[in-house]
Structures are given as structure tokens and as C-alpha cells.
Image (cartoon, rainbow, N blue to C red; front, side):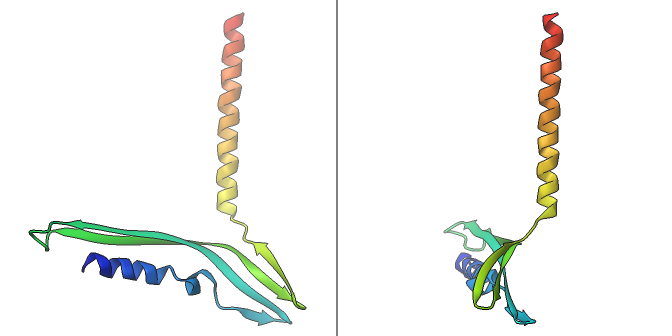
Length: 111
């Protein structure tokens, strides 16, 4: 597979139709889900030996929210990423504990 083939595949995986999901309607409310898609591609090789080298690409996506259409009004409803919230809470707790430890150590050295 050539580098440009991989790049074209990566571009195809990251098009707008992949960012916005299929709209669906229920009880007069239309919902259009949205996601964040990111990715990249790369490759390398040797001009004297075209068979040497390699290519690859990766794509990642995560939900970010949805547009909610009701009675002609559109509003954005962000997605709640509970895993990210828990991770941030853990990081804040670790930083707070390390800071408290440093304060306690500094105050005991002064005595």
C-alpha cells in the first residue's frame, strides 16, 4: 500500500458525515449527535527500494454532545464524559495530597 492510499483512507474516515450522526426524531424533538474525530497518517521508505518502509494511520473519536431541535429552537446539549470527570477529580486529589504533604514537611522542619 502506498502512502497516498493510506492518507486518502484516513481522510475518508474523518469526513463530516462521521462527525455528525444520523438525526432521529421522537415526540417532535429532533436530535443530531456529534463527535470529535481526530487522526493522522504517516509513512516512510527508501527511493532506491520502494518495497522497504511502511505506512499507517489511526483515528479516534469520542462523543461531544448533540444538537436538540424542539419547536424550531436549536440548543446544544454537551455530552457528559464521566470517565474524564473521575480522572480529573483523582488528579486534583493527588495534587492536593502532595501539596499538603509538602506543607506539613516544611512546617516540621522549622521547629
